[in-house]
Image 1 (cartoon, rainbow, N blue to C red):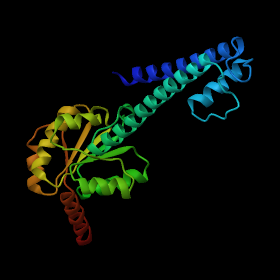
Image 2 (image 1 turned 180 degrees about the horizontal axis):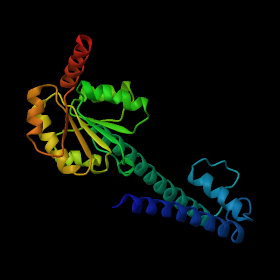
Image 3 (image 1 turned 30 degrees about the horizontal axis):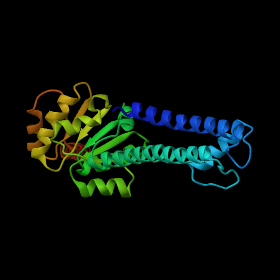
Image 4 (image 1 turned 135 degrees about the vertical axis):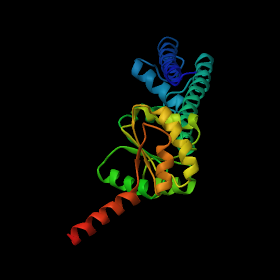
Length: 252
């Protein structure tokens, strides 16, 4: 059953219980004198209905006829049943949302908000540093990794939106709206798994900007061999070029 339909059903049941309680209390208390004090307004009926369903029971209004007592019993059982059902539903949705987050899935509300965000896949050195920069700039980003210890640390200690997910599982990865991402940076420690992750992400995000981090010349060549659509950045190559340029400037 769809979430919106279940919410509608519970909200309708709660309204019906209150409406039935108020109407029944007013009729029995006003026309049949079923309570120790007359019920002369719907406000008094609403008051009795509320304290009865909530089980507060102040004792200022008490049923004195069998009809009123029977009505009171039905009102208590029905009201508590509906409210416990609604509470159980809300609690289960909150737990499911938390489990979804821990298990590496976005809940429906988060999924709807995932647009023009940056996705960092993997927790090697470049992505860790990049996450710090993105946070400083107040950029929207998430981190995906199969390393549970790293994910827990990033989430609990730094407050990042980090998710535990198998980067080589296309179905699991599809939950993170790669097609809506502004940029995707892949920087994984396990380079063999990184190749599979790149192929999956390229399939999920054909129009997004994808950058893969290569920490060696061999990794760079391997990633480039996968074909077009993947930008490759080699930090070691960039640093060596900068240093070489500086040396040349000093010698000139």
